[in-house]
Length: 208
Image (cartoon, rainbow, N blue to C red; front, top):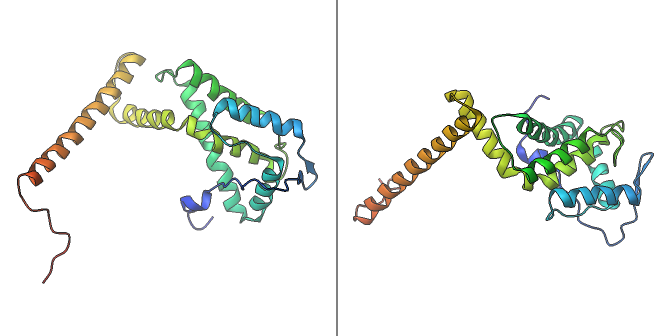
């Protein structure tokens, strides 16, 4: 891949539902009602607010993916699978405590991705991991905040190398976050007092 893909190039848009949703086949693969229902049941457990998916939408999405440049199509899928890998690292990190409900839902997601013969068998050329990527995409809002915190903790741990037990290392990170937030608030307060005191706002443009 010669040029770096932009974030917009990696979008995985779920097609809108069709009023005539009859398509169930692409290539030599037919999506059965039971398999689609199991996919949606899992999605509902992972993220109750996520939209449900029809076979027709999956067929439309698969055909769309096949129309993308090969490197872009692979990157679209890989970006979602990389998120799932981050979940696995988080679950296996002894320094990061995850509550029982979040842990179980993350385990369910990563377990689905390990299945070979799922909604779309993994041996299907290109689209074999489309259902995996779509599951991550639609369920991700339920995991997004936790993974952001975990990534920030990993950066802190790598840079600061805090000592002590796992609980003490996490507490050190939390204290660092609080200190950073307090500093930011202090700067905002100083700026607000400065402007409230009648000092002019800095000029955005200089007129000659």
